[in-house]
Image: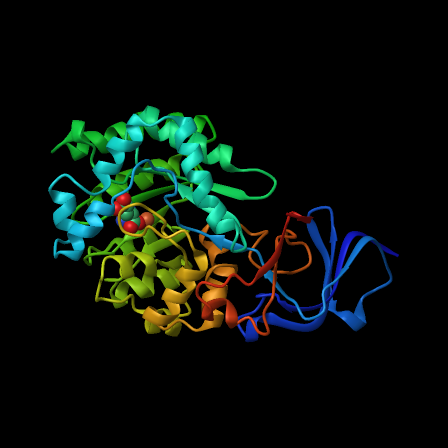
Length: 401
Ligand code: NIG
Ligand code: FE
């Protein structure tokens, strides 16, 4: 007889284990031992099982716990004044070039303390968790010097506990800090020779990211950075082709990046490169929305070429002050015309791929028991409602939280 710690029964399951019809199992059951799913299927096919605890949840749905695969939730201050300036007609690029933008958040973050950053980030993380998120990727990139980048990644590490998994991404190449003005070659050298190796030796980096754009780093700089990451066996991801087409998508694909993110200006060649390398296209509709962009990512081409599409909040103080994964799903549907099923896959199965996590993102035997329980009649409601939280409960690593 099968032994398990938790048996959930009389539920409808959106397992997300296939890209047809949400991988739905109606009237299903899931058995969990410790932190792992050991059985999943139709309720009338449950094997003989000895469960320490049984939950019968008629009328409820379950899905994999959600994953936010691109955030910048650790920062001090905010940029509401820049938001006002943009409403009056200034562009994100103009603000950035005149000393605002990312650098103003860097100044605030450098002045801040680890304790204060932790408190601010916890609040943002709470917002995500309340909507059913069980895994969050967090980037550094508002320090741009060893001490502050380290402080940010240590805060990210402290945010991890048995209720939330954190992936830490090193984004030292986010912007050029003022002390390296006009010396971007030197800055990249500093990042590659001093910052990245040190943070890696402290086990603070799960992946390396960069901002490849005409207001940020060139393809050549990103190449040097990615070569260094490769030599340390660290996977890479890239902010690519957000505001202009610089060929960043092709560059990310050529390094076998886990993901290329934003992609509003990605060309057909870029789409083909992603398809070839298996790199996930991460849609960040919050930044598109907040910056009032017009050029949409080539969604139809991604579909045609079967490029996996993830969705994330991009929560950051400049271009996406959004701590709601469900709002990001709604924006992806309403602005980019992703289907509700693509939206749910984008914050579960495909988001797991974008982080290189094989044990999460779908409900299957052998996967982590990270399960969101919903008060809905169909999973398409998860992309439909705004301002109503249909989350009933969240199970992380087999434990109800
Ligand atoms: O993902 N593109 C670069 N990084 C962030 C914006 C950061 C900021 O403006 O503070 C993004 O959109
Ligand atoms: Fe970002």
